[in-house]
Length: 108
Image 1 (cartoon, rainbow, N blue to C red):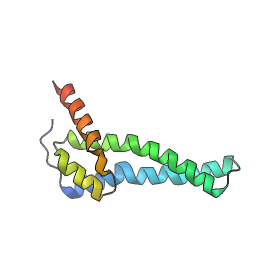
Image 2 (tube, rainbow, N blue to C red):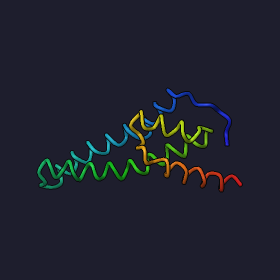
Image 3 (tube, helix red, strand yellow):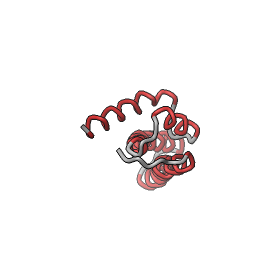
Image 4 (cartoon, one colour):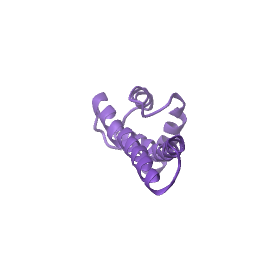
């Protein structure tokens, strides 16, 4: 693992750029494209687009966790910053631990 220390600001900004901004782009672009291609009403478009965004969020948040842990960020600090920057939920500690254990196995 790398020994670079990331500041809280870098973690928050990277979480926003890796997770939150792309999720919003996915949601809004899928609303637009689905409205052009289908005849769903607005409520249906929002529900479908948020579901697509939620799926994308799951993969993007895992990537951000892996990126952060590979830069020697402690699990508790990552969870705290992830919650405050709206990237993670309180229950995501299990996800962080699972990814951390996989990273440990890869480095052995």
